[in-house]
Image (cartoon, rainbow, N blue to C red; front, top):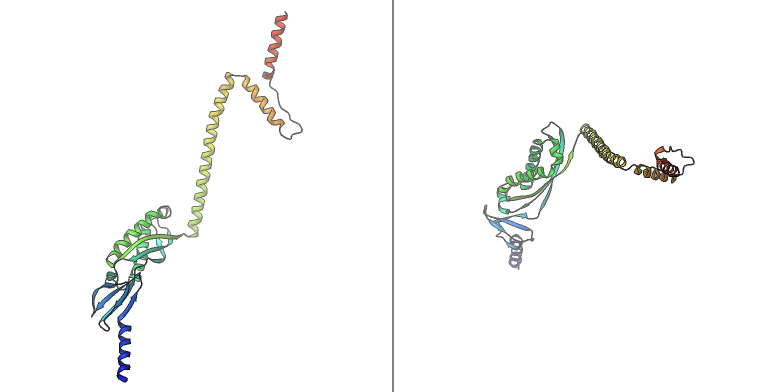
Length: 254
């Protein structure tokens, strides 16, 4: 009886040590007597107790925040930059045997690369050409992590923290730029209006009656306003057609 119980206990211990179940997104790197025999999974994995050892590796996309880094840009501006990287394990065997802790190694590499790349760029480039910086970071990280079986898919610079003095200086620069554009637009409007006025003057000079029509239109516009009294000078040219008609009538009578 004791022998049967002992046998059952050994069987349970054997099954517990030998059977492993891996999820769809997991792989198990198997070491047999210290030597790698490959990666297995997903599903049911049977190991030899004591002889085999398994290291579980996840193949899912990993999102890692890069802590804010103090960076001095190429034009000597001190900023803090943080980023986020997206990567996944492509080769489970290399991720285990080529680096001690691929998560920690990738994090440290991302921090040093972020400082190096941002330090080589000027502040204006860092702020305006974010896609170029992201692409450069991704290429460098992917090249360095490829021997570890890691694929860096995306790197995004999240935030660039500027000193208060620099923020005020940039605000003044932006305000001055807006004022300059407003003055240029106003000057262009005046220039175009002067051309239109010159064309209108030419037309009125060729057709003097147009001035009288414009004069009457102006009177109509003023009469639409709620004014109690309107003083408007009447040019003598307005009565010239009538005076000419009277002169012609007198000439005919004589």
